Image (tube, rainbow, N blue to C red):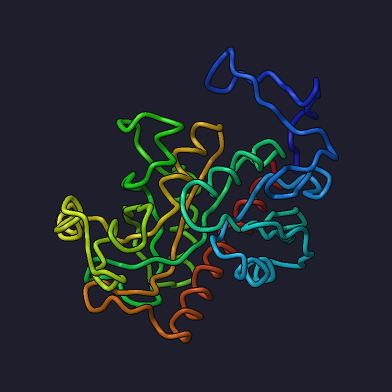
Length: 288
């Protein structure tokens, strides 16, 4: 694959004209190790695409579902593997839960030459038509979190890259995976922000009481905790981003997380979509 001209290094600093004539992008030196992820450009072997599950425990299985896999690093919430799709290296790296650790991961991956990311996670649906084990391909996110406001004002939308999202939807159709393309609500908290009352105290702040019904009325499909930060931070860094999540809780029926069997079904389905989409994407680029 033609990756364009090699980056020139000046103490890790490269001028980039994408989006701003005055913006400097601080790429890492080839063997410079990132503080949080413990990754380097040398370890990535030229990978420019990353899959981002939240759970470190899901990294290896996701990578192996794509192709031959080698372990890279594990530090804090960031566990990583390198896999291969269409003879091209693809990074799989966990982000941990929530926006702050996700943004840290994106910042470091951008410095290592990653230019597009796909969040791969789990979610709770809030619309009747979304069943356990279905997949939500997310086109936009409600910014019910704080991290994205450190990268863009609240008026700025959290939207996915159109091409990547379209490719995921195409892959789901071809593979006959039950799915919807929808809008998620990204919350900083698992209980009050998602209007869950099964917490230790059962207390939900007044401003969140009734919010689930409002999001349902507006057509929001699901709750999760990272996508808004992925979309806005990626846009600020000049990365392309997409997101898809397997449904493991159906909030219209119960607050309970689904059984391990449903969890495995959801995982298998989002792996199928991502594998098909990546093979299609990298095969297209290999023909250019």
